[in-house]
Image 1 (cartoon, rainbow, N blue to C red):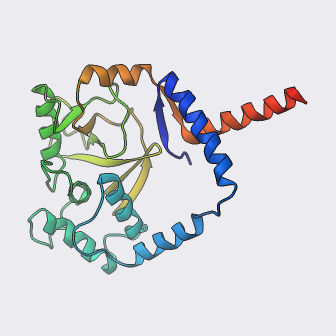
Image 2: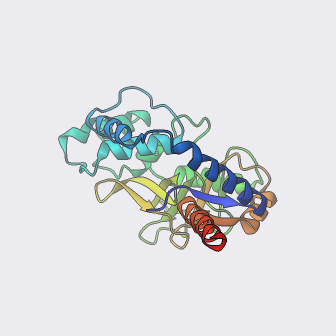
Image 3: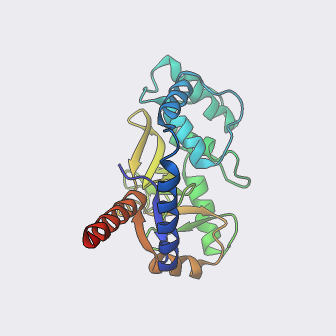
Length: 250
């Protein structure tokens, strides 16, 4: 599975190469934290967090995904999770899973983002972002086409469902949005009655929602001029380069 995805200009590529090499040298003297991470993730899955969640959209989505752990919405252990999504929307705590709860999942992940137009359905914040784009807004939540930008951590990736609109100029009532969490991965709710992680596929998306994007022209230029490379691919290239240099010098 790919790790973090990188969008680099040529100058930034050289900088990252140096940082990765330095990390390799420093890492030789340190122990591996992976076992501790696995233990902490297991503990989070067993205990439902209480109160507001901490962190940004990606961090909250990851925590929720780990808590669900593949369990279905019919599992009594997940009742409290569904109730908190509904309560956060100001709705009756028992509306989920009677109603689709993917919008509630996304709204929960976005709870620390002021100005986000939360809702049980994705249409509300998709319309919010598209209106901002049509108005030329550079702050707040703004919609982009997948051909214009690459998603980054915390963006929402959306598409229509069941032929309901086209997910851009006509936003219907039935849609699905996921939280982009990095590494080419997205996390969403109410997917096969649980929370799931999926690989980002530009061809399936119709809208990317980004907070405070700034100047659009610089964003599009950055996307077209960047080298798109996953971190594990970059590390492979570095290892191969070092090996070849050693062999050539032998």
